[in-house]
Image (cartoon, rainbow, N blue to C red; front, side, top):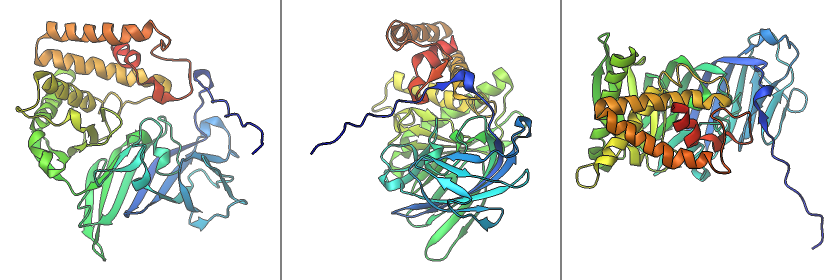
Length: 399
């Protein structure tokens, strides 16, 4: 067979100097998930607000998306026509005209979590639906302005087979639950605190739960829950104790009290990061949750305490106060590493903790600085932000 060689397109470099605010904000999001074995249908209702400060009244709305099957677009209650009123490509959905300053856009897509082996967006792990959206994987769930400066309140409805998925979780506080016909059921959640979409989380499965409570300095009782497959629950107790230590330390040291009624951790057996600080619903790699005296070392226990603390501390340094753009990644990660290092030092020996921190810095980060992967804690450009979850951003950023 003869033919011309096709060269890969040159990668696009994102430049810090090119930052500009979006033409639209999305102050409120309503998500509706219909979970099935072979597909998931996601209905998103975006409450849009034109960014008046940019003075671009005729700008189209350009949303990003990946691996989505578009089923419909409705603007202010009226179905739009493809071609005349919107255009869709493999990575974007563009709505040409949006009347008024506060339009409402409904988007219906179909995704395939069961075949999603990337562990990004919505996927399945050990028969459980789970999400991972940082840094730019919410676009694998629905079309959106997938950037950290777009912050919204979220209301989420999840519907699934009750026998297979009795546990339905998302961010914030639970607001409703009821049975539906044909053996299905639904749960609704509302997070009153605005957050970027990378902090969205959903978990649905047949899971057991370890429960406890924490009384805050103002006298509120916060329910604490760790979800895992039932045979793993007896190995979650140290993670629960670490969570309570973290909450108390943040109150005593910085005066920062937890701001929801419920804090949850899901123990994921397939997860492409150590842990993720999704607002009110952290997702952890099992290695940073599970431990018992028969198999775990002191180092294992210390590691669990540090990571649980790190993700909890993100509730304020990363979630409530977040990044303008991904060039500020070290602003949330370096600061939170500093906080978890101080936490570990206060729990044990400050001198030993500092020695361990410096050994890790010299071993891992110094070698990165001395090699071809050297970069500043705030780069001037990147091709993929996923490449910057590095010892420089975390450890040097802490220093």
